[in-house]
Image 1: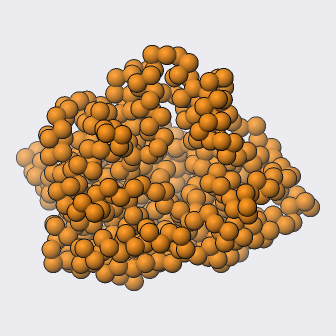
Image 2: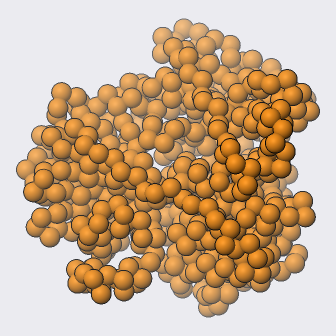
Image 3: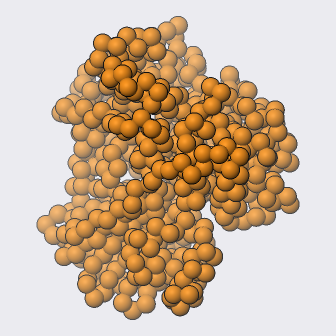
Length: 600
């Protein structure tokens, strides 16, 4: 586990150490280097590998894990002796960057973020892996004072010259969409480096360029079912094998779905002697998910850890959760993930997860809407109505067509909840656009949004695990597996009325029949009476002073209006999610804007 940070510009001598102390949970042993005058690179690490490298002309600090190192070294040995001799991830990434910039970095299968200093050009370049798995933020300091960067933006907040005003439009966007546009944060003066990009700065922070990786392509070369199954098996098992850093002890987060179940059985097949630890979270009526995970663990001979997550955790853990998430983009599952990370930290240093399997193989209910759009898209009324349903579910936007309104009543049965309004913002998210071509519409849509979704979705796992020094890894972000998935046509992802048909068929080689048709359930806390009571208590704690609060975020009464929508004392999914996001937003405002007692 590691972090990186740095500042380009004059600053007090103790500033880099203070930045690093805010990131101590990611790796407490600080290393500081000064590759140039008024330029400081820092890293916090919990292992022995060096996160710095310099060849005299270029210097790098990186937080990274490269999974295809052997292939890169083999390919480079014939062309570049420097690549062949690279001993660390930092040295390898720098040599690849020097060889061909972003185009060459696209060949890397790994999770990384880095900063590179070019001595001759006096330029600083920041970069992230294709899916933005490792976080990296930056702030351009006011009045030309320079630029600062860090793995988490809490390390930037105390720097002189950073605009720490809240971005009201992004606060409103969060209430609508449960996530933020790529590159944006809830702080005006802090941005995220885009996934799959390099951003270069000169003149103490004047942005020169931002180059992004080529878009993911779609083809139909794996239209034969048997061939598609074979390729998934080959690439998925390879992806898992590459992401197991310690073959003697492996950690797996079991959500209860077929994706993580598949990972568990493949791990046992690849590493028959390994000590495997599995982790799942739940409470109360989630007994079935917990029992299924325990049954899987028994079947593979793993040490299983059932993490109890009662709603009462909200009372003492929401502040810590928000502090580590920073932008509170996740729902109640994030609290479960935080507790999984805590328990796992005593056993393993990384956790394999099934994250983004759905985005590769069309596993979500909303993907069925896209499938219907591809089939009925010749009718403009049907296409508009289905687009309305998608935008209502994902962006909180009301239908615009008459047919869409009727479908919304049928599908949601008045269960959609009003979006809390942020005072001072008129922001309304743009409606999602869909591919115009009906052929392979689902694949085209998923490929176009995959990196964005992987970056946004992965943040809740990366941050909640990193809070305890545990790395998040997903084989479904593997470069070769992603390419394979988008070479499989829609008809093999939807078949016999089933989402993810082709993945389920591929996993039959490892997963016994009693687990192969495990129904998909969203990972979250159970929205029962106990949850409603705990959430209401959190609302009272966070909002009780708002009537007289000059720093109020939301328009008066909008959160109370959501509370009144309970049925038999229980929140339905949409209302519970809206209130949860509002509560976490309020906590975020107190921690990061009003600067109430922080955790670093």
